[in-house]
Image 1 (cartoon, one colour):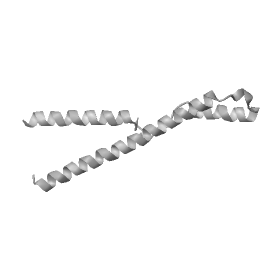
Image 2 (cartoon, rainbow, N blue to C red):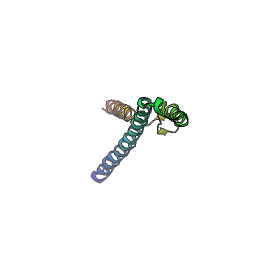
Image 3 (cartoon, helix red, strand yellow):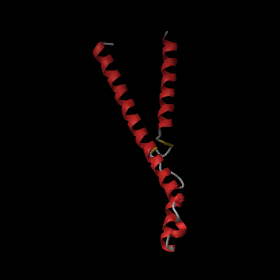
Image 4 (tube, rainbow, N blue to C red):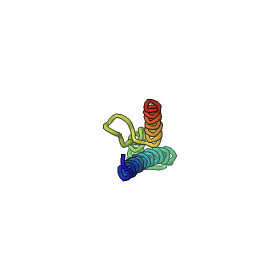
Length: 102
């Protein structure tokens, strides 16, 4: 393999890891903001509100009880824990391939 091809492949891997990290970080921020909305609605003094606004607050709490996730193929959420699992699995496969080669 030529040196230029090797540099190109390394650049592609770094680019893919960077993009995956970015997507997972945004997904993690989305989950954290949704949980913060739930806690803010929960800690609000609902008993001081008018009944119509209290019902709206209750609907917000019901909706934010389950956090929003960005999913990959509707199969698993894209969060930083997913990114860590992806890196661990990739490192395991690479280690296996190097062991089989040498």
